[in-house]
Length: 409
Image (tube, rainbow, N blue to C red; front, top):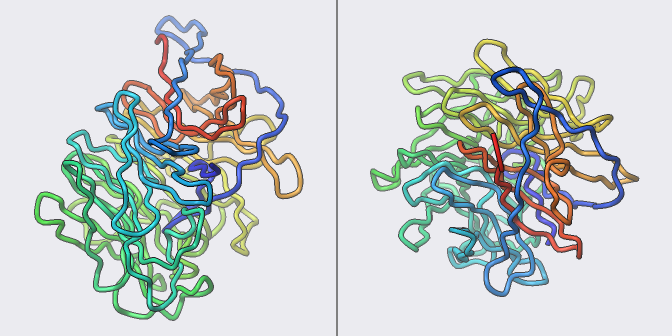
């Protein structure tokens, strides 16, 4: 199993990067302060979430306030994954829409029984597009990919704007789903990976027959957009740019926010580069976290740092551990606690990721706050009780989903 959501780089898919686990230097644990200003540490108990029946590995991307954890199970040894739901530690294989692969890849924040993600159907794409989903699935199958809603033990496909493919990322407690979908129109700004059709950000209203609505990109030169997360107030974050390769890069020229009652998205700014500017989560106070390329990287190469955005201060980068050159912020709760990973380069084309928590301006390696006999590689989401989920590597080398439960504080 080598699916590391923390390594996912953005849009419309992202990059599934290999996780290389090797020797790594320990970081000094950060501290939090109690109401009297005294330094303290929050320790965590780690629970491993085993794969669904017959699976060889697992990874979790989402935890909602009802305790549901969702992600993927590697169901075969030759690279097929299925969306998976864990309730009270028990795994349920959500199956697919008829094709080989499915997955839940972004934080889902619905507590009413909805799970959203992406799945291949039984149809082969006649255009041969690889589409966004292929970057997340271990094997390229050529199947059409669609966003799905899983409800009452059934998975259903979400409509597109007339094009072939779709992608569902997030859902709120009002049953509004966000993602992106293809139109029938060819987009001349597409390049590489066989992408041909335009795609734009979408919302689906599950309380009104999955009605689809378009969220337009920034006005001007942008032709593509994608929505990645939504809060209960209906604020939606995502990206705007060119079609490019349908996987981040210049499709994520700008990080954007769509607000209820406003017809246009607003640009959230950047860290100095026009590529990979990708929001991953927004809490109910409108605070956004994600990752963005740094200043000086203008050719589209992936070189991202984690960021935090607020309406008052704009976009600011978050610290990484020690001298780590890269990282990503992937989840945030309503208390403003942020989770993600920090990446150390260990060799040519090799890296080691550490699950991290940002709290009160301090970064801490989650591995330093547990006695887990293994390595916590990514912290992908956090609920309002402070419970964290992500992917770990056990002492015997298995990739597994986990839950980190705070013991105090």
